[in-house]
Length: 385
Image (cartoon, rainbow, N blue to C red; front, side, top):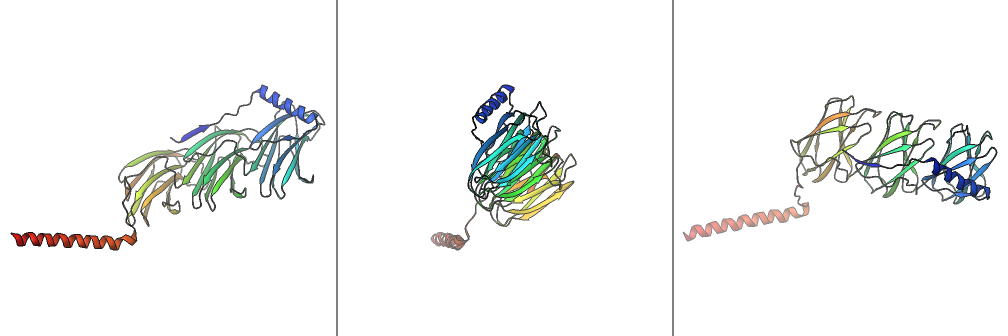
């Protein structure tokens, strides 16, 4: 089973009341409340009241803001983002969730204004993430599955580290039959968007790192009105390094299960010039079994996919530890089931000794000299007899 990490963020009424009281106290004094990166603040608007917040950002940062009505009254949130020079950047209003996404073009302190669009008043929660820097739930564990909850209007952030050439796989699955349509976004260490994907059930991203550093993962509801919420599992694998189910050896069958959105990884040791032969047999479910093979540096080599049994035969171009990735290969990966993975050739239990090419002439000379010495010794003993 994969490593599981569970973070609880259940908010008690007393904590909400305390947060709202603190915000109301600060706002009554006319002060702008600083927004916590990767976090949220809660408040109560009284009819025509307006609350103000602030944050600092630099050129190239990506900003995400979402404000949600938390009831019990019919609060209709309106949000406004203003530049350090007090120019209007963006505004949005909705009956349930208002949102703003902005790529920063100037450095300084930005203002966020919150009010009820219909002047009725009510309670709200404002979520804020600035990328890079947002990291609400910490660093992703390689080969891990991280379980969490998206509340109404929520923004969840994680980080991961990678080197140039590393292969990054992310899958985000909605669980427990909720209203959440998971959206997954990956940002470079600079804060630039790399990829984004949303789906009713499983969002996915595959990326080869072009720069080293700390990447940011942002999760939210991806529906047009952003009104979905619920539980999710986030799967992550970084290659090389991923090895959830251990090494493969010739002739040994490895049974496994692909859950919704799951990523299973194995390793194998092969010698240069050997043929690596893999067989993935699907034993249950309607998913399409997909095998992917990566070389010791993390570069993609080959794949095989089939709704029954997938076969992969690939010549090892170098000696070392290869990585095997198993997942649902359907275009919309919304399926799951059981499988048996077997390496029929080219997989060793231990490292295969290798000899650098530059040493081959020396090795040949040593072998020849040893043979000469042995022959001379045998001749000497024969003459002595």
